[in-house]
Amino acid sequence: MHAIHNVALPSVVRGTGPGLVLVHGAGATSESTYGPLVSGLAAGYGVVAPDYSRLPTDAAVDIDALADWHVEAALRAGCERFAMIGHSLGSMIATRAAVRHPDRVTALVLTSAFARAPASTRLKLRVWRDLLDGDRVLLARFLMSLMLSDRYLDAMTEEQLDGFAELIALTVSPGSAEQLELVLRLDVRADLAKVRVPTLVIATSDDRLVPAAMCDELIDHLSAAVSAALPCGHLPALECPQEWQRLIGDFLAAVVADGAAR
Image (tube, rainbow, N blue to C red; front, side, top):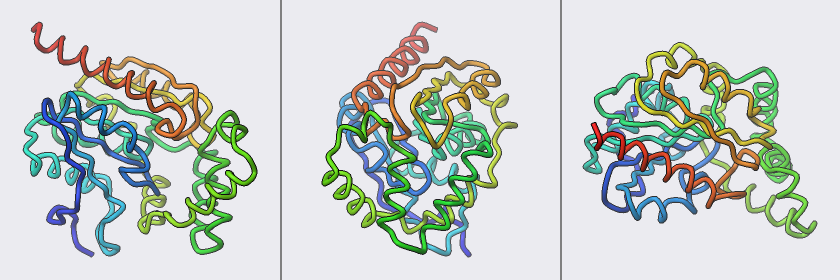
């Protein structure tokens, strides 16, 4: 195995302004996690969206390496200091990056976040992992039932549900198994008290993968955190992208304004 620090994978780099690094979650890509938000955020920020789903299969996938790699991707894009947005596993990576690189990370936005996956989430992740080697359409249907709210699913026809499942089946991340294993063993609870930057924790209230209550643990242990909630499942970019972008934009604008006032 080799470390990922010297692996320069393609990253989406858009916009100018304060740096903003987007960190996706397990089994996902930057596009599937943040796609609708990138252009809007790039109107006011220099957005860097790395995609660790494309890491070589023999790369050492651990949270320290992933945290460092996202920081290095930002530096390669010309961002010396930057805020980080993390979704799901990406929230854990962003949190670790803030602890390891306090001179670089200026703020955090953590969505569908947790410090350690609860038992209910770990059980679902094991089923997800075990389905990777089988029928991909079956896996896709399972993921849809897990990731999306009843409100979103009920708005689809049967034909649309089947078509969406077939699309997801074709786009399963090649690094999913390794990333899911990382989530299963990861625990960043000790990191929370070490975070010294303003943090927004966004719960997804209809999330069947990560209970919204998991965000309470983060709020209780982060020294400078505020909370918000989105009425959606695990994938806010699909269900409520405009509301998600508004929460992010308002928070980061307040952080910038507060910094300018000091």
